[in-house]
Length: 483
Image (cartoon, rainbow, N blue to C red; front, side, top):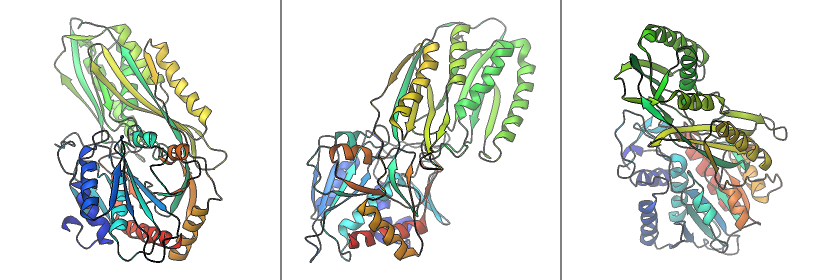
């Protein structure tokens, strides 16, 4: 079984290792779809796919359980593709390279894809099991969960036949999720003008790296730094003092990941070069102190750069720096209905000079209150409208309203108590799950979401706890036998 030799349960880890060999970036799931359909055929299992690429694999009930309710197991096929800047990896072609690190499994320099490859692996282990007593099983593998919930949006009534769904896309063992936030993306296109770099200019490149990043929903309340914000704050201050010009300022990557790295090339009058270096040393020390608890790996660097031929005009420089500074980021409000849960947040995700004379700025907003989701999105819009930018909102996706009286939740809770001698935590999550969209197509669906412990999700620091995978598997099997 390769790198996972000896890990339990063997079937789950074996299938996860196979999945790691198949490229599956969001919106590029053709290879993993083909793999799943071929795998189902080899195991004599009924399978079908819809027009969006969602795959459904069915397994009949075990003997004597034919009249039990059909249970749907669900996970998504795509993965977030993030790598460290010094890692050479082509997510369209190269396999993920997992390895065991003590109590955890990680990947070499990239995201691991346990979100949600481990959910897929558990489904496959159930489908090929011979020692689990269960009713009819339907395993749903959806596409493009990470960048648009496309598969869930496209799911049609009638594709599924069950009314009980176990979502295998959570990241905290011992916690069961019965609700989730809705979300919306807000994308900004900011035009800019350039001019010949002023005479007697000096150029520097400023970098921010070493941050943890993480999931823009589940990790937004953990006090992590946003590289774009940390970088822009310093450049904004230099602009106020010395009138800098931006040549380029970029950072972040995916709309649902907190920005881990950012960099900028700026110019200013040569007479200020020592002032800027002194200011940088002071700022770096300040940031090290500010972030020493939540971001101990933070690194700031400043180095001389060749003077570019052109830079943004003063007006365009000011518009960019002011709007990035003013753009809200992080937790906006906490929930009064479920203490400890983030109600509303926003993520300044990425800044890219994506084409001549245009800057693409990507943000995402979440809330478990629909009106507040739009409120925070409008707040982001207002900031960039003041800067003269073009702002567009995505379609968004609905939240999943909690139902504490859910029958499947009661079965799952009792199962956990019986297996582990303690009660699980039952709560909502400030992240988007596909469950809200499933309810739109299947309004009678009874659902719960649970999973093993993952950390650093959506970043190259992603890791999955080995012991909790075994516990989660035991829990899943027991639920299937008791339903």
